[in-house]
Image 1 (cartoon, rainbow, N blue to C red):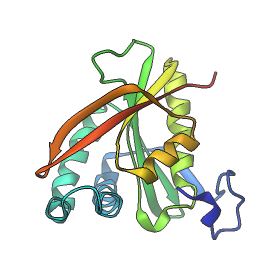
Image 2: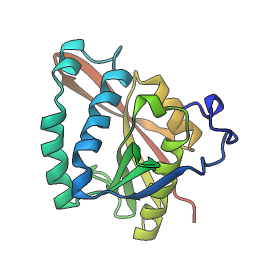
Image 3: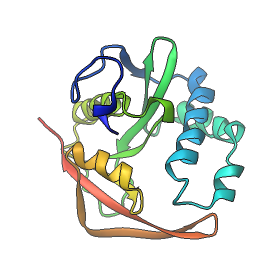
Amino acid sequence: MNDAARTDGSQPGQPDPSIAVRPAQPADARAIAAIHVRAWREGYRDILPAELLRRMSIARRELHWRQALRERAAETLVAESGRRMLGWIAVGKSRDADAAPSSGELWAINVDPPAWGRGAGRALWRAGEEHLRWTGFRDVTLWVLADNARARRFYAALGFDVDGDRQKLFEQGGAKVVEIRMRRALRT
């Protein structure tokens, strides 16, 4: 996320005062799903098969999000400016088999492509980080596609480092992709 590209008058590295972060509600499921689909279509355009991205359905994602928001396995937060949702983050306990009890995880973060570079991702991370610290986690991991240079730069700017040689190979829409794990300590 390139904060230098801001057009709202705020300074790079500083929060955009028009962005508010709040806990997601079940009524947010459709807006979260729409951002999820748009962010994947744009962010993974040159990484995942075009047919997979074309077949993504806001309606199916909405069903997933309605259930996820009811079950609350992760804390999901949304960023808004005015009445417009800009993005979302999901954080919680690490799902990795080798995770210590003190390890949290940034499960996912997506910002609507027209809002990239406005600071919504950083605002979401700050709120997610605060939730993880408050919950008692001391460090946090995430998984990112190795070929997703934009996301890797964003996470590195937040203080995440590649976690050794931890990676997963899986198939997504007929393409083999590699995810790498990144980690950082949580500020106290």
